[in-house]
Length: 375
Image 1: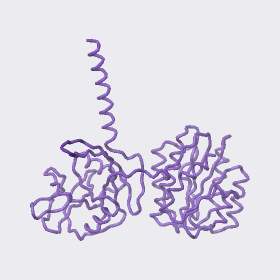
Image 2 (image 1 turned 90 degrees about the vertical axis):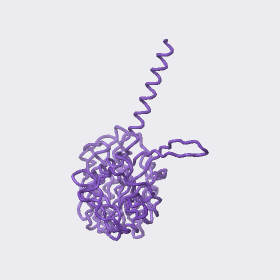
Image 3 (image 1 turned 180 degrees about the vertical axis):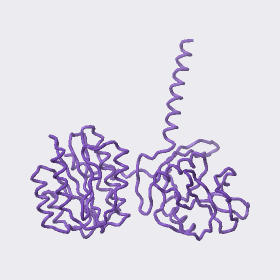
């Protein structure tokens, strides 16, 4: 009897753990990812039924969801998804509807119209997903929908009043679109190395007009990954500053250092789109470290894509930062970057200068940079 009770107890514990794991894994939005021309929405765990050699099994996989930045007709949207190894979105469960609705609402996309992978099929005289699966009779069609049933009729989705609705549109209409695809393994080089030493870090991001909005999104991702990794160590602090003609503190060393708060502020950083007054940013860094001083290592990472507007002032400000005992690191992107000025910002330390020819390769600098900053 005692053995039976023990077995039942263990079974209950194991079942609880499995249920908890299943619940946690369904909708994942913790890791923000980057793809050129898209906004990352979130990740969901899907179960696929696979039959091999007469044996049927369930396979759990993580799928990423992406909303396009640009607009296109349905066929072009479908091709763009496929070019990224994805497909237009097939919404097959109520859980998926809920997750997509929440992600669109969180990304301030309420009211925007998106292509999804649905169409009117003349042969079966029914609305189906592009993978051949019929769209459920309980699908959330909007009022008066579906409206058209023609060979060029496709399905679009829109969030109205906090809920997602389907509507029909001609396939030539140009709107944004949502892709979904199985998650690829993260490139190890794009993951910063945590630093378990007490220190303060200020990340400075160039927000000038020479940076396109798409490239600025990559800079945000770079900043978010570095900042949130830095506070893995409880006694470290981080601050983010942007600069152009003027400067702006996104959050200071003494502001809320919780990961969700930092991510929200970083991903919502404004694109200032003015000049490149690097010296003002450097002066503000020195002022912030003085204002919130404590007896730990002070680190600066400055990210820029071009030559400053006033090289002489930049040199003077950089010299003052170095003289204050701040360990300065420079990250340069693009062909127009001034290597000499980067070296000045880094206090003459060539091993604290990191460069890449294009923004698409910026995230690959995170690992070597974070290692160097932590030394």
